[in-house]
Image (cartoon, rainbow, N blue to C red; front, top):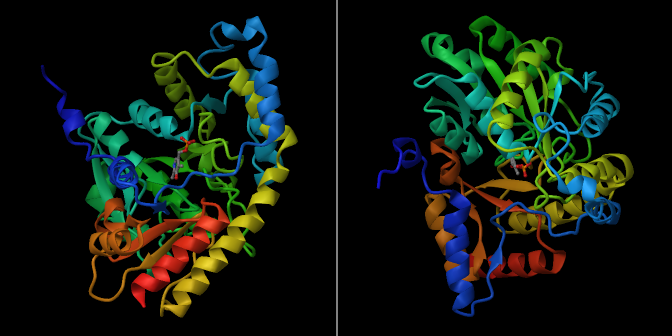
Length: 389
Ligand SMILES: *Cc1c(COP(=O)(O)O)cnc(C)c1O
């Protein structure tokens, strides 16, 4: 049987490799602590669960979702209200908001809606691996724009060769950034809009960590940039701010043409989001915004523990990330990221993500997550201290 070439181009998903490694060790009886996967351990807020249970009992919701293509209007309206209040972004819920089964699905829909086979798509290196997969699925050609610590892990758009920029039809960006934890500025987003207009590039700003920023940083939407709606969409998600990764609900917002295109892809792929999940999503956005206020002190506390531990071990020459629940740290002098991850796993039974899995420019770094319970994080840090001293 033939398997399509587009699938063969997609490298094995990093987290699956990690998961296999963890599973093997666990089945061998080793107490492995994974700091490899960003997935909040705290439960989803109770009002969200209650609303799912209530609405799941209503037979009206057992049928195909309301407004299959775009999502329930009530959900889209709530998304628009959230964006108006939190980010000062005006959105027409009818035309400019699309419900999604998570922002990851939005990445695929965006590329399928915009890119023809063979066309260039810009993405950052390091970057979230799903972007590359989306580009391959649509038979596009990824072009890696390096992001490095000396520019705050923001791409230098002026350094993209003009022939590449001319050919590019789309671009993925993601700030607060996975894996580096870097945040963007309004000035940078203004540059993005100008670049996108000059070269006619559709921008997909993936923003699932918009709410996960530490003291001194303001939550920021790409769509608050003047002109952003002319050139792009923003994806967001309830996964990270509301501890809802398993629920699969997110949204795309912005440019009407792009939203319409993505809705067309979506309408011909799935048949929408289970109504009860959409009602639960409304409950998250209306009743549970304090969840973020509860989670940020937890992530802040854990971030301090990690930073202090590595400081004791001699890690001082890096910028502590300002957003996301990831820390992106340099590997020890002379050690590559896979060797360092292997050392951590073998000496401490702690799983970290090697930077090289996020791209060539991720080499020399590793990523660890703050989404484990405090006692497990303490134990992991103790083991790391012993392994490295
Ligand atoms: C977690 C994550 C996503 C996936 O979010 P879902 O809404 O759960 O699909 C998308 N993009 C980035 C950068 C992420 O880290």
